[in-house]
Length: 111
Length: 92
Length: 120
Image 1 (cartoon, rainbow over the protein chains, first blue to last red):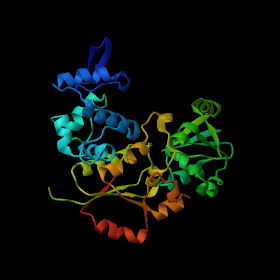
Image 2: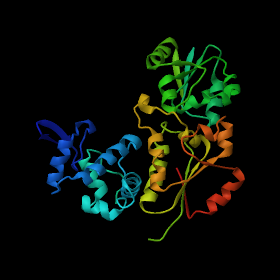
Image 3: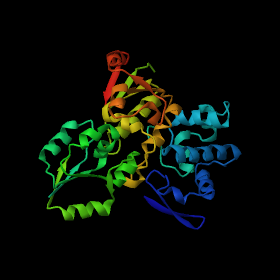
Image 4: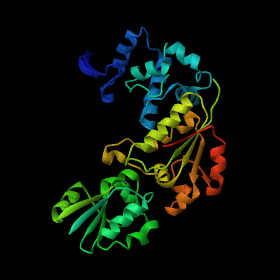
């Protein structure tokens, strides 16, 4: 566990870089974490991050890739509900990267 | 005066039967954890056979979405029951 | 990846032990590996699906929340023992998700339809 100061606020992270406390999250935190992944957050990123936070609020866990793709398809349209689209936005492992930027715990069951 | 606590539901009827066999009219049965499912109306006949008083723990009822006509106790009430009885017997 | 049909059979009430959550997480894991999975609720396991749970009172997470994500994991085959439900004075209307009620007589065929049966 590490504590870092982001935008003047001390924020605790677990050993894998996920926020310890969901309430510490702000959009500014997401921006800083995104920079470290060499990402610039656009409108397209934000709609996925907001959807993820809503998913977590409703279902009390971070989704693995399959339900994430399905939830994106249902809320943001079929052409966005595809793995390739999410891979382009959040390269590597979209479910893990996006959960981290959204301030959520690491998804269980993630390949 | 004994306080009996029972923490398993109708899936384990033998546990409640054992408890009933060991109870007397001056004892109290407190349903806790999964034991609170015995307070459903479907088991009214079974609970009618309890020789003493029957109560259920509020936080466990709330957690599981069960409403009951039984007397309920909160955590403080649980502590009071343990103090007001000579001993506590746990059925688990 | 070849498919393997899993049946997750769950017989425990929620919260008293971790069994109910373990069963649900096992089902989600099967789905993540793109294997078809069916859930079967028997005995006190039917209590897992009751509406109106509020386990914050015992500092646990609400199982209902995770259950409601099952359709997003494409887990749509949920069977509930008709007898277990009736014995407890409950009906399908008391449950958080649409389920199929199954008679005892149909259980052997349900088990036979699956490659692996996990009893949790």
